[in-house]
Image (cartoon, rainbow, N blue to C red):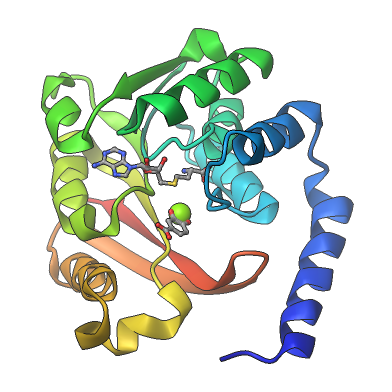
Length: 222
Ligand code: SAH
Ligand code: DHB
Ligand code: MG
């Protein structure tokens, strides 16, 4: 769909931004390399997006973060770095294999004391979280078919002023053709949910780079 020269330029721009602004480190590099060695798909957020998550958590003053979709812990490490040392990040992961890789990466990054991994289908582990201790920040990045279910859970588990970020909302532009792909339809429906919810004010940003043409939505809870 996109020609190679364009894709190569996106990649070069991302690499420039990553080395100039993001400045990753060994713990983050290791999270990605161990994921590849374990055969996990290359679907962690781009470094530029990972740092954005850290900055958003910090800017919003988040102390309690909920993540849905851990993979190898790359976004988890970024988010954990955006909260205070006595904060809490609960991250939900379906696959015990992914969770095992993530656990090691999170320990290696020195943030294990503030991270709790809940293994299993998120729709089964989310109901165990206490509703009287709201999360300040939620990052949704798991099975796209459940996006709207996760948004409903996020509304239950947050407070006015909490921030919700949803990954992969452009899906190579396929949200324009929801009839061609059930995930595209679910992603589109989840943005319509944000747009029509009286408790959410949101927008979305398109991105281009190592993860192709994609984007994220951000919303504030009222
Ligand atoms: N947030 C990660 C990437 C997550 S990839 C990062 O940026 O580094 C999506 C993850 O969601 C995968 O590890 C997949 O196993 C997990 N997942 C899929 N279905 C799930 C479900 N029902 N409940 C919890 N996690 C799920
Ligand atoms: C997929 C999932 C993601 O969370 C992502 O960022 C990219 C791709 C996927 O399931 O294909
Ligand atoms: Mg994603």
